Length: 368
Image (cartoon, rainbow, N blue to C red):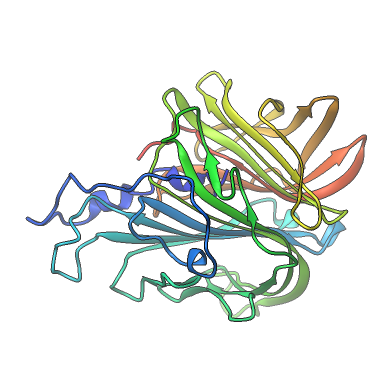
């Protein structure tokens, strides 16, 4: 669900608890509600700082078969409860976080990194006119010719990547107004860019082996980009969500999510299938997600599904992960753990697409 990205609601403001609270702090900051409106580009590619949470999210597969690598890059923005009238440039009124991860099957464990900072200091900036973010020395930008460029120099890897859209933005829900529950106040603005053509240069570094030469990989593949912003939280009784963004091999795409309660029951769900032009082929609210086996994380102790069977009418789809351990430890930034994993989708035992699966609320309920 991105709702995407999704994982960001995992205590996205937790870092603010460690920041100094001044006399300007104000607990009555009002966040605007999400209401149906027409999304306007390129303006809506940019940040929306008046809203509570926002994320820009890129995932995808590089290569295939034994050489396949999964990747995730996400930038989050959070508006805190600190008053915007605070004249100090150190006031934490806006926070930025960023996560990056590589799923390399032969390593059997996810390589991931995260950074966090207050906007206005230490190079933490965003643009409201278009997609352009910087946090420390991590950058993300949409160019004037509609290409997304990323430069992520983490400790154990570096990702330099360019993603080129093959179609205009896919507007989720009702022309970009995406419901997340039965109440009209439970919604986000949300669009996707599936079927991105990706070229990447990845440097794999091993900090424990001093003097060891880093390996350099040049790969191409297919990616998925989401941008979403909202002011609402999860619906009452919900503990988390399951979400997929799948690039189909025929050029189409599937986005689906369900919001779960403590017992694993779906409280709200959506299934959205598009053709290669972004035209809606089918949309349902009654897809059935059935977990396949379990994997227990040695870090969070959470029990995650190893995969899913998803039933939509008389159709059945299977999700199979690229590798088992794809849990992200985000305690140093947005807080908590979540699962962000590369998956293949098959139907009748034939692979029909590849993308990403996001699982939240399995180690603890998603809260702010």
